[in-house]
Length: 201
Image (tube, rainbow, N blue to C red):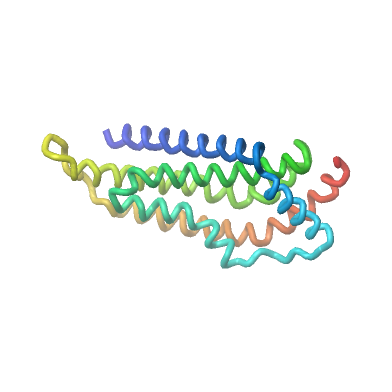
């Protein structure tokens, strides 16, 4: 039963993430002019060499924010409702940024730029978010079910157990390492794709 609950929660969170991503694409297509200007200015600054390496502390916060929010929401009843919202928001902002790159530079150049800007962070944070979000959703659901009037079973496992803490510790290590890699990889990747973007455009 517990494994079935985790599978169902994973499916719901995936739907929320994809739904948020679809909404982000549509918003960028229909009204993303300001984001287009920001992307263009950012690329112009890179071309002129005026963009410095991202701050490590900011990169760590950026990597940790969504997974950690999902973890702590899993300790409350509110997680049943707010963890899916977090996944939808993450999908929305990620897709909005990627679609803005495609709008400004076209498919080929936009994909190169979006990959260089977003992939190093997303490839680390999104899997960790799903790992912690699925466990947090199961814990929050158990808490929620324990508050329902008689006829429902109480919480059958600790909300914070050793496996949950191990997953959290593992994700913290991975996310911190990912933030460090992102800090050094993103500028290098952006500089690497600039000639290809210039050749295509």
